[in-house]
Image (cartoon, rainbow, N blue to C red; front, side, top):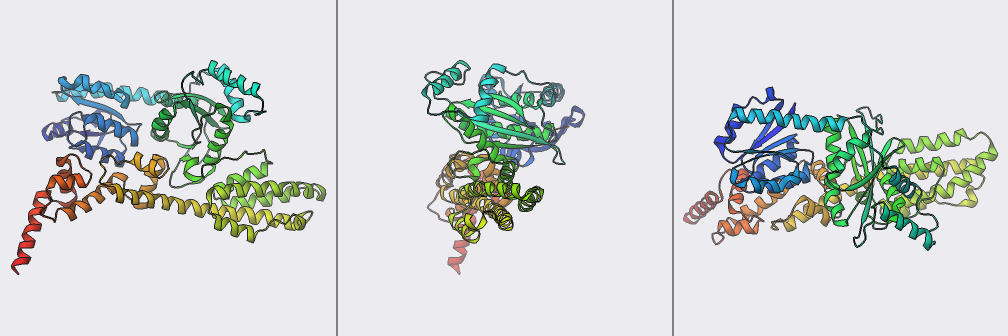
Length: 536
């Protein structure tokens, strides 16, 4: 059963759509209705439907603009336009926004029912394609070039000839374009069932490619229970579509597969020679256990903008890295104990322990300086000092040092991730409070201002406040409107502009929805109260 929202500003038409269509028999569940574009957008974020059936000519937010904004918050939702013949060609410009059908008004209940059957088959096909276990066709030539760059990096960076060969081959493979500045981003995806069991397979590439094909160029391959994807295009393309594509994948895996995805995303880089750094960033992002972002983790949301070369540490050090990043305190301690318990002789114990100490210390503090403030990091250094002369050969001291370092670091990271999430929310609220009068303010513009991803900010705001971004923005604007409308000198149109509304009718609608009366009624009430007060 697919969920659907109906949006039309003509009440008679909307009520007819709601009441005369036997939605359930057609394979749909009607979960909401909206009388304008703004209300429809609000319902989209709250109800997350599979289908939006909307008139294209609506007040406040028109159908095409609504489709664009829906793609920002709910890219997996399919959209059907209801439109008069005279705007049919105009409606076609929105094809990029998941528009799967155009229905011409007037349309009878029988005609719409027939169209809904066709629409359900289209959605069925999309769902079936996404669920398909068919393995994607691999471009072996491209993969044989890309995979070593991602996993091993560019060796002998000081060799001009080697660098030139890589750039030449990248151009041949289409990963570089003459005269165009191409940027790159790496995404690592894992898919788990409800019990947390990794069910990612090579066949998942086909499903993910169906989504990514809509947004940007990419190369994907399967490795160690994950799908690794290199995304590439102009920086403008990546910045515009990356968060939409990621959200589309997350929503589709959840809705269609009834599974959960875990997605790590690197920063955007401009040098194809440095793809390995981006791969490590994506893997590191996947290690963070961040409740705010849920299954989507951008490295830029949790780590400062710098990258240091990562050496190949022992398996133990690599595991402790993951547990420290994830704030997994118990696992960090147990892993440390298991390692030292497993060493079978004193000579090996001493040799291994003394090799691990400097590498583990370097790895852990690298994470801390990326995530935790300097004060707490310095405090840990004081509480857990590295004195190699005391540690060398002292089995008990080495064990205690490693355990305390990892456990304390995991505690700091867990606490800092919680605090940084709250701080990001505070910054967003401060920005809304300061810039609410800007009619162009949006989830994307605010996330760009505070340097986090829109996905992260949207989930964070809901977690911290219990409200959506749109609800918070509207509430702040209405608070200001209530204050300004008390002044007789301000006309309703003036107040609307000061509160960020270009459309006075949209402002009046929002104000009445929030307060229960129109702006004019409110001004009149304030005037009468003032007059009563003056008489007294």
